[in-house]
Amino acid sequence: MANNSGVEKSLLIVVLDVNPDQRIVKQEPKILTQCVDSVIVFSNAHLMQSSCNELAVMACHSQGAKFLYPNADKTIQIRQFDGQFEKLTLVEKTVRQGLQDVINEIINKPNINSESLISGALSMALCYIARLKREQSSEEKLHSRILIVTGSCDSATQYMNYMNIFFTAQKMHVIIDVCSMDQELTLLKQACDITGGNYLKIPKQDGLLQYLLWVYLPDPIIRTKLVLPPPVKVDYRAACFCHHELIEIGYVCSVCLSIFCKFSPICTTCHTLFKNSTPMPIKMKKKKKVTDIVV
Image 1 (cartoon, rainbow, N blue to C red):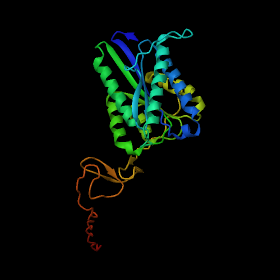
Image 2 (image 1 turned 135 degrees about the vertical axis):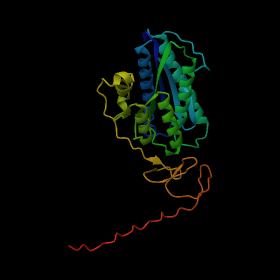
Image 3 (image 1 turned 60 degrees about the vertical axis):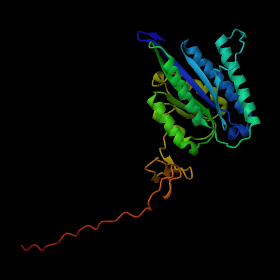
């Protein structure tokens, strides 16, 4: 969109969780294929809104994250198919071929960790946005947002990484949206609340495309004029570093700010030594002298 100040571009980065250990994928393997189809249609719809819009698609799993589109490592020969726009065909073929390579890597490597490394994918996305902002001209203005589509559960082991990413995204004016297909995600709710994004747990996986087009396709500026699902209640409890559980009251390391649910003389994160905790001395209040008043 061109205006007096220059060209405004809208960058959408889709982080798709393709971890085969997700509960919904184990119950119904076809859901992953339906999810990929919905994400491709949603991505092409974003490109169709404006010729200045830009797109990036990432795949995330338990062993890492990878950019599916754009992919500089492969050159795909594009041929118009059924009158489809060449760029849309390029997105579809690049994403599908890249996803096939990712699945082959997952099968060939032993699975040590079952949690999806969403925090790693978000870090790569923020680095990608920072690089595009450095390369853009002074006449261009880039509006960036990240959409996470996942069926995994919350990962308290990535709590510190999440917090660093959320506040970095807030400082970079990057909006993080989350679309949960299975479970409530407490930590990712905080990401949406901190960055001004939308969080939605879809009631049915079959309607994923409809929810993507309704809730996440409009730009954040337009969302205020639409009737969208009400904002969810955000739980800002922190996760302890010892048991990876959400707690309300705990101990914080004064050096590295690690959080623990019980007192420990040694911080397991930075190995700082602390004195044994002793109860706070209670100061006895002085009793006021009562004097007889003679009338």
